[in-house]
Amino acid sequence: MRPGRPPLNNHQPAYVLPDANYFSTDTRNVLTYLASILHTPSVARVRDIQKSVKQRLSADSKKLDSIYREMNKLRSAYQRFRELTIEEKTIRERQLRALALLGSDLTEASIANLTADDLATISVSQLRDKTPLWELIAEALEHLGDTRIFELQALLAQFNIRPTRQAIESAIETHKDVFTVRKEEREKYVSLKGA
Image (tube, rainbow, N blue to C red; front, side):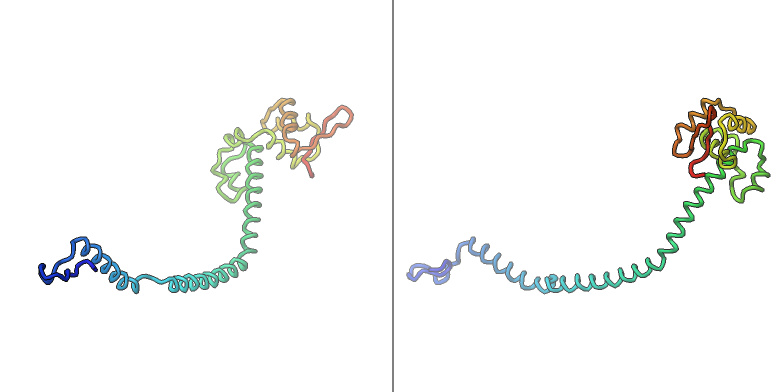
């Protein structure tokens, strides 16, 4: 017999209430079922999510196609910009080496006449102090060409740069990727690689 039904004997009242546990379990199940029925329509279904994801995939693909077309149009300009940036850096470094070699004989006005930008504000003596000897040698050889070491030392002295011969040879030896040294009889000649 199901709980909650009165027994068939006549000694008890016609209506007997079931145990309290029956109500709590059964009521909870009924309410949970009812809540799930009422809640289900407001929860996104898998089909709705799939449709949304597919729509976004399609829209993203179209956007990527647009981005790729624009990137292809700009690619050559970007490459040219990168080339100019590298060229600008090379020229700037060459200008700084030249100013360091020329030294403090230059005034701000003469630097401003020689250069077209903010280099006139640079302290040439500080620039010379910061410039390594090998860069000064490279700048001198850029204009001098293949020369003997003692002639290079004499040229640097005319620019008020007075390194010892050993310092010059050490700078050249340390930067074999920049300089080429050849011996002819007892004399050492130095030049820039590729010159």
